[in-house]
Structure formats: C-alpha cells, structure tokens
Image (cartoon, rainbow, N blue to C red; front, top):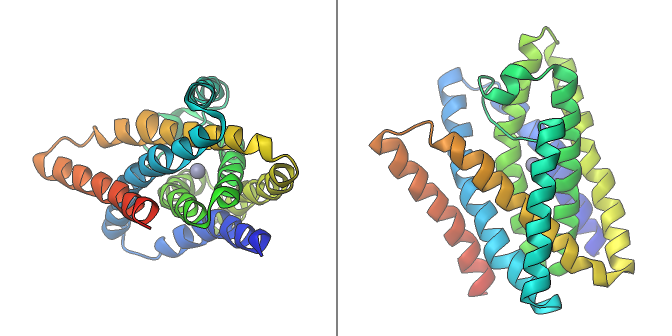
Length: 247
Ligand SMILES: [Zn+2]
C-alpha cells in the first residue's frame, strides 16, 4: 500500500508537474507569469517548513541532533558542489543566469539530476510518515512547475517543437520515478539509512529555498511584491506547521 502512495506521488511530482506546466502554457502570458511566481513564493515556505518542522526533527529523533545536523550540513556542501558542476538550479524564468548561460543539454542533464534527488526526497518522506510524504510531494510540485515553465521557455526558444519540449521534460522528470522506487526498496531494507536520506532531503529543500528561490525573490523589491512574498512564504510554513504539529 505504501509503495502505491509513493508511486502515485512520484508520478505526480514528475510527470504531473510537467503536465500541469504544459497545461499552464495555454494561459495568457501575463497570467502564466503570475501563477508561476506565486507558486514559487509558496514553495519557498513549504520547502523550509518541511525541512525544519518535518525532516530534521524526525531525523534528530532517530540518530540524535549532532549526527543529523552534520548530515544536513554535508548535504548542503554536496549541493554546492553539484551546482558548481552541473548548474543544479531551479528558476522559473528564461532570463535567469542558468537559462541564459547554459546550453539545452546541460539544462536537461541538470534537471535530470535534480529530479533524481526529488524522487529520493519523496520516497524517504513517505517512509517516515504519510503527512510528510504528502507535503514533500506538494513542495516538489510547487517548485517544479515554475521550473518546468522556465525550461519550456528555453527549449521552445532554442527551436524545439512544443511536443518535443514536453517530451524532453517528461524524460528528465522520469528520473524521479526511477530513483524514488530504488530509494523506497533500499530504505525499506536498510531502515538505518532513513535518517540520512531525510538529511539529504532537508539539505535539498533548504538549498532550493534559501540559495535559489529567495535570491530570485529579492529581484522584485517593491513593497507590494515583498509583502506578497512574505505572506506566501509564511502561508507555506503555516500549512506544514498546522498539519504536522497539531495533527
Ligand atoms: Zn525539484
């Protein structure tokens, strides 16, 4: 039964995100931009909430505070190096540094790696608790949809047909399904690895939120944008807090 949840969540997080992003391409440009931006703000909050309130406390209860924090810290350093080598970044617009400077194959390879980690995150979260699994999946979808939209923009601009662009994104998303199922069986067989998978998940979520989404948010500095950003990050955090803590 649990495996079924994980598979549904993995499909939702990978192919589902690409599908929703593809559907959103039907919206008029301005609306599309707005929805993607709001989703990104909300993702900032749910990623931080899931890492701080779900994954890290759970890991600490399993292996103790210092080993868990050391593992999270190692994860952050790992993602720093990963970004150096393969431009592992999410960004929702085609004008960002990553999209401006990276060639199409690099973007697709970087995404495939990124989605592979998302798959592990989803599997590890479901093996910890159902609620955490649901939130991890939602957090993945909320940052993946703007990401896929940015990718569509760049793939279409580089001359790919719509159909091919969607197909390539589905393909790079399917790595999540593969690593997610492998992680599920590995973690189920070796329960002692679960806290370390949670640490990697927390590090990935913290890295995306703090090193990636929030710097992107600071590019918009009007009072109105800032208030909307703060409000939606807080909403994302509260959403996780209410369900995980007062459940
Ligand atoms: Zn992702």
